[in-house]
Image 1: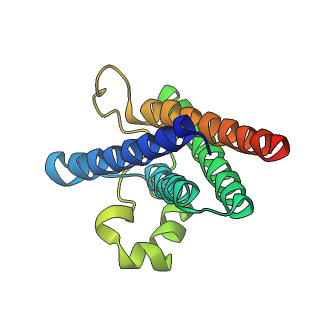
Image 2: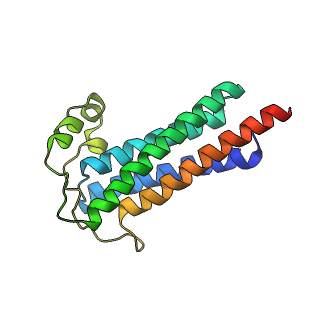
Length: 165
């Protein structure tokens, strides 16, 4: 793996930590309750963080490519959830708040273990004020887009390097 990919993936892990920490700060300090889509985006950040660290830590090329592929899939999933959430914010009559999705998410084992981070209590269409000019789902959309690009690009680069070696 090139030094650039190595550093970019470590930067991505740091960005995910900052995003998750910011979400927890907004929830616990300012009372911004996460909705089911917010929780799914948090889980995507956790997986992107995990797979970016694994991509850097793994030494075998095959395992590294596998981690890059799963990281890309996690980022693309997060991108899709964030895009839908941006659409919900743009169409406030649509809501995914107190519905079967919230009940299903809150019943998951992982949510039961980490309710302070993953319990969905809010409405997806709640108009929280923008952070640095953008709504939180828009920030997630941008960060997940960057993550997906970085994972796919690193995967392509690792395959080129492997062929030329």
